[in-house]
Length: 122
Image (cartoon, rainbow, N blue to C red; front, side, top):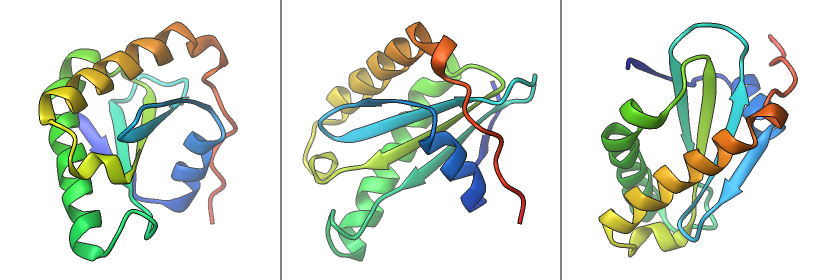
């Protein structure tokens, strides 16, 4: 499955208003766009996580998790946002991968509530 990146703030806000699942190392937010386009993924890591080096390390690890797992589990027509947490720095990669797959399964179970508001275009 082809994955695209979320780039605009409105898309991130729309995903934040939909359903989410928390893990120790990250939060996954999902929004049903109600179209047949490819799944889109965005990443965010706040300054609370650490300095720029630490934030980038968390973001790189999350991108790799998505690259490994999302092709099998991400649904077309959905937006996903991964919000990194400090625990993502030291968590074993296998654990991150399993947490991500588990989070997507949990989101899929609750997807009837997953459609959020349409993103505002600025």
